[in-house]
Image (cartoon, helix red, strand yellow):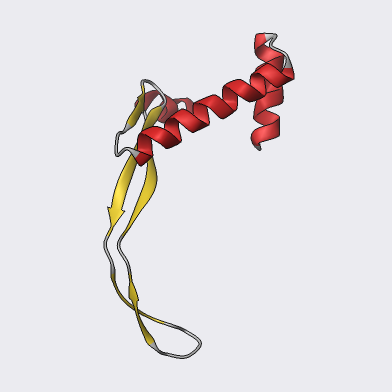
Length: 90
């Protein structure tokens, strides 16, 4: 399922116009992104938790040249599924 499929199914299930469903989906994605940028976690009870994990930097090698490079630390989004979501899949 891609974003357009999600918007269409939301519109079908809720009776919203497709334009309004698109605004709702975009709004939810924006809110999650803003919370993660601020370092907060987004906890959706029964679904899961979006968190920001810090990835340590280190040394690496360019596979083409063999040259050693420095990898900077970075922040990565992570998702931990909730118990209800995990149970619904099995």
